[in-house]
Length: 404
Ligand code: FES
Ligand SMILES: [Fe+2]
Image (cartoon, rainbow, N blue to C red; front, side, top):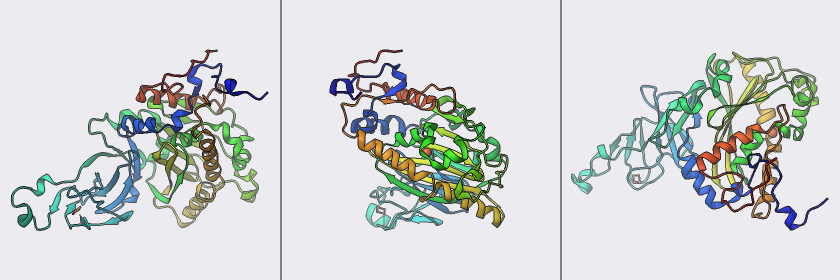
C-alpha cells in the first residue's frame, strides 16, 4: 500500500541503531561539523610509498579535510608530509601531481624549501625584510606521518592525535600476511568526482546485500559455495572486516570460462577479502589484484573517490599483465563493478536531496550471513560518537521510533 505524507514521515518500528536520518547525508551544517570533528582528527591513508619511490620524490595529495598536502621522500629515504602551502603568501607550492626536486621552489616569488620542510631561500631577504624575518621561522607546516603495514602512507593533521597503531588496532591483521610477505607497488590510479555523500560510498562498500546489483558478483560469488557462510566482523573505531571465499571467475561468461590462476603472496587464489576503515577507506583483495579506496568529501553532495590498484613489486611481466588486466576489468573506470556502485549512490543522493520529509534510511538487516547490515550500524555508532549526535536523529527533533 502506498503511503500519504503523514505515513511517509513516520519512523520505522526498529531500534534507532537500525536506521539513520537522511539529513546526515544532505545537511550542509552537519558536513562542516564532520570536517571539524572527524576529518581533521582521524588517521587516513593519502598515498602509497611506491608513489614516491626515490629520494627527493614528492606527491601532491588532497587530505579529506580539504587541505592540500605534499608527501616528500628525503635523501634519508624517510617520508614526510607538509601542507602544500607556501609560508610567504599561501601559494600552492607544488602544482603538478608529482615530481622530483631537491628543493621545492614556489613559482610566485621563488621562496624555496628542502625535503625536511626547512625554508632555504627567501628572495632578496636582506633588502626586503632586513632582520625582521628569518628563514628558520618560515618552514613548512609538517603533518604527522607514518608508513604503515603494506607501505601505505598514513597522515593525521591533528598534532595532538592518538597513535596510529591504536586507530588501526587489530583491523589489518586480517591482511597481515598479504601486506607483509612482499612489497606492494601501485599499478593504477584514477579518481571519480561523484555527486553523492561520501558515507553512501562507504555504505556500499560495507553492505554486501547489494551484491544483487552486480551481475558479475552474482555469477562469481553470490551463487557460489561459501558465499552465505561469510560473516562481517567489527573492530574498534568503527572498522570492519569481511570473511573471504573462493570466487568462481569461470562462472562469468565474460571470462571465457577461465578461473583465476594467479594468487597473492601470503594469500589465496581467487580470494575476496574486504576491510572498511572509518571514516573513508576500503581495502579489497580479490587476488590477483588489490584495491584501495580513499575519499575526499567536497560537500554533503559531492565527493572525490580515489581508486588505487596494487600489484607486487618485482612481479614477472606475465604476472603483472594478469594483475593489471584483472584489476582493470573489475575495478577500472570502465570495469564491471565500480560504475554500477557509482550510479547507485548518485541515485540515492538525487532522491534524498532536500528531502527533509523522508525520515529514515534503513540499516536494519540482521540476517546471520554476509548480508547482515552490522557493518553500517557499527559505522554509524562510531560516527555518532565523534559527532556527539545520534545518526538516527542528529538534530533531536524527530519522534523516536518504537524499539522492537
Ligand atoms: S607565495 Fe610563495 S614565494 Fe610568494
Ligand atoms: Fe558494489
